[in-house]
Length: 201
Image 1 (cartoon, rainbow, N blue to C red):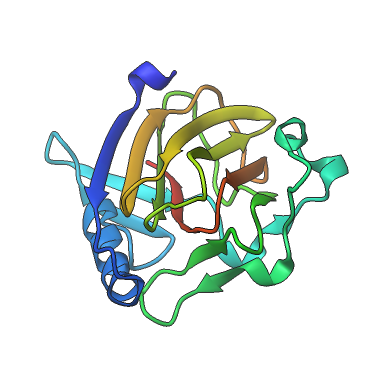
Image 2: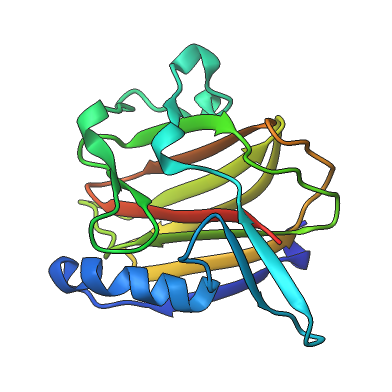
């Protein structure tokens, strides 16, 4: 499936203080989706394309190891303090979820999808990491699962520069509204990640 995806990578400012203010604007510009959970943008043929948010960041449920479909990837130092992630909404029109891996280095959350997904529809995933550092080289890993099937994942080598990642890929199967969607992150080192949006269009 990865060969069918379309990716956009945008370098961002290294300063966390400036980046937190700038990123919502960058994400909104690239995704054209900051007004609500339903957005209409021009399509390639000139007609409208509706983009729907599949998740509400206020509704994520942190999964215990017994319920975690990514549990096989856990290492002995895996942890997730609930203070290590939070929803940020004060500086942008659309909330996002912020994960600090110093406190939560193995993060798996779940919620029901907000809309139907048709096979072949375009899924859009937008995440961002600040500069990634670690005492020795390692990896960060992010993934999305819908209805028990992994539909997207990405491995980022550490160290890495501050980057926004936006990828589009075709939905592999129909998934009615309410289908479980899972977002996962694990990371080597003390770093910061943000999940902006998971959408369908």
